[in-house]
Image 1: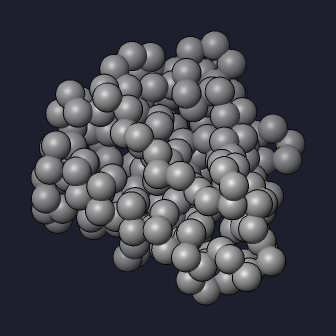
Image 2 (image 1 turned 60 degrees about the vertical axis):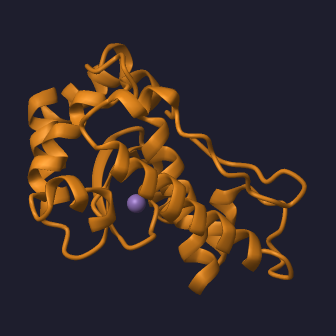
Amino acid sequence: MRDILPVNGVFEMMQLPAEMEHVGVVSAMTLSFHHGKHLKAYVDNLNKLLPGSGLENLPISEVIKRSTGGLFNNAGQVLNHVMYFEQFGSKNHEPQGKIKEMIERDFQSVENFKKEFEQKGATLFGSGWVWLSANADGHLVITQEVNANNPVVNGLVPLLTFDVWEHAYYLDYQNRRADYLSALWQIVDWQVVESRL
Ligand code: MN
């Protein structure tokens, strides 16, 4: 489980992995707005809303589970984006070992899994996220989460996510959300995904 702890009551802005600037699937301009403007605003808003909430100094997963309204939305979007940006890189682009076995057990094949994941991302109405998570039985599930929601709310362990808010792809792919989704597999680092089990 990837969680984030506040430092002296403050959630810090993550650095974008240097490799992300060279990945090409999303442009430098998209990355600069997505990370530098959108995520930055969620981090700033979260830190403004935390004091006095009674949830200071908790891990972000607990803030998400115990909050509503603006605090929930901003905490959710911080965890969602950190997990999204961290899972990309320049290596390990095919699942191996344990995570590959789990995918083949629960989705028949990696190819079937990718098809189902892309389909759930493409058909999510409005803004949100498509997630791969592990459930309490250790099985893998794909869920559509609207707006800022995160699978931890439903007791799942979130592993992999594609952002389908328009700000994630519109500068590069315009309305072609499905093309953006199928391109993202080229930059997923599956070792990062497996480390979240
Ligand atoms: Mn986003």
